[in-house]
Length: 277
Image (cartoon, rainbow, N blue to C red; front, side, top):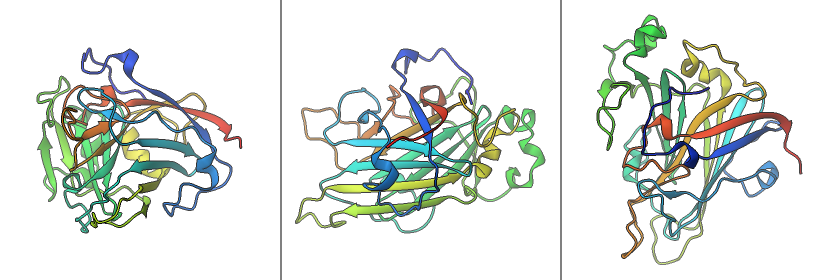
């Protein structure tokens, strides 16, 4: 699934990562324990880098993906010496905590998920305004613009994206999403040094239908299909000077303080071969 390409110099094409996502033979039990089982057999991403500058970061963050006919599975390894979290209510502004984030882009829309160490999540579904009628979203009651939790969105650091504004649906939940977190340490207790936390996700392909509206695309994917996804981490505790730590890190840096740029998202290539031990 390719998003519209634009001549954005923020993330040169040659700098955007590519990842081969392989099949798994058996469903994954989502419990956040990713130092065991299939996750020990797959390739992880390169370490996340500063979202803005692209510089190396002082803590290690990596992600890996696999899939089967039912789900896309995603796992994050997050090094964090002082675990922190405060928000417990679903769809609270998780970006105010330390979090990891996942974006999945279609041609006409994209999905955002944020999660903290308490396993609290925040979700939004964004439709490019110009695609509302073109792709047929306007025909679906769930995308009625008059509903509570719907508002216009014009980006964060990059205002006035060349594709225009998005309509954000803060009332949308990914159908069938499963998520879990495991922590290696004590949350909100700086008297000891922690190792970090892990995140495990399962996103049903059936729930991706809204991302592919207006497109001819296979769910689950076929061999050679390419999707665009973004993987990031935001921290309240930045690296000390002289490091110019923006506080946002990503597998694919964006060159600006804004995760909402699908043209910068990592290329995920789906391989119809099983993970080998």
